[in-house]
Length: 279
Length: 314
Image (cartoon, rainbow over the protein chains, first blue to last red):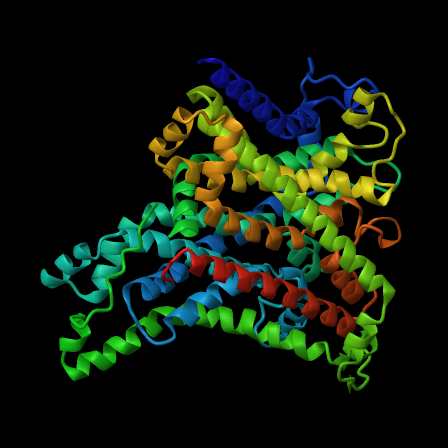
């Protein structure tokens, strides 16, 4: 009777250990003294943890600046896409109108378009846009915000749709009977009710923007002070010998914020994904 | 399963009874709420897509971008060049093979662990969920760097444990694809696991108990009961995986430094990117991008059909 349970537990714990190991190894290598990293007998622990790699990364390589750039871009995208996706989700769940299904299908199709293919026209678009509107051209953080907003919006809307639909319309009707205006209902009644969903959705937008490599690599060409984390990480790869301590410290700095976000909202995330996939 | 809370469009919908003036306003209202999204998506999504198509029929290279040379219309010339290039076909083939292997591996690992998750005790389940969340959350960039370090020729843990110091995992094309594939699966199996686990939870326990009473083994009840019941969900997960695995970029670009030795590890989008930005053949790169987009659109249509077949109202 208890044998299958035991087997499942063993597999689950083993799988958990294997899955988490690369992350453990990253953090461990980030605090290992340089000598231990270069040793040919790597040990899965260290007795002399050090912050030397973090110090080097944050100091000499100006990584703090890139960290800040990434945060500014990601948080702007989160704020903007939350509001825009909420409004769009409201439109497609609470109204029946012509082309509603077409609009929904477009949101779905937009998620499938390969970002890498669009990099080419977007590069020229951003270049031309920069000539007209300063602040969103090549080499600016604004260009990254705009593009990530566009790429996170379809999925955010698709996911918010599930959360808005889950709120009973009766609540809004009751507010309307009480004399509340549409605007009040939207922002004072519905918005707080879908806030948990909004948080889950925001995590995805945050990750899209935070993890992006290709746009940062393509748009930020010469202005290194506007570099974001992923592209900046490449600095530590050297032709002769990679600075693994530095790479792992920088990778840790880049991973931790996302990890914290993700674990903090994991329950809602699963609920939201279930909603997005299932209904 | 959540049910969709849309009222059937019966004759008693309130708009019918409303006064004509408010009716018109109500008809415009949804578009008002969609406007911000449209303001972002039309210029930054719609326009680039049309531009991509346009660029792909022009001879557009460095000379035209910065040299001021006139751009010439070449019709389907770029497509003819791409489709006539043996390299394109070999890249397309290895993209398909690589993506298929990834989908199969992701699904096998994800489904197996979803079943394990549904049978494990509380603490092991929590541990596996958290570990999977961590892998899911890790940026593709840092996942790539860590796996690269693990498989490093001299200092990598894997070589030291296996006692094959000096073995370069990125030298042979398919060995390199194997390491990249492991990295991608590590990133993507959690989505499959979590989604299928949610699906399994929604399966009434009585069905599985009935199977058990009839003497079905765990293996049998998985294939004969769980898989048929979860088929619609599995279809969606498969198609979503195809779309993601067909587009793997960061891992390949970072781990093989832009496509590997002589571009041997290129998949379609790395190839398109390198053609455009590496060789400054923007027209040609766009043509490859269009081909790739069309392939993915075809898969997307299957996705939508799968959604519809589940009896969903969008």
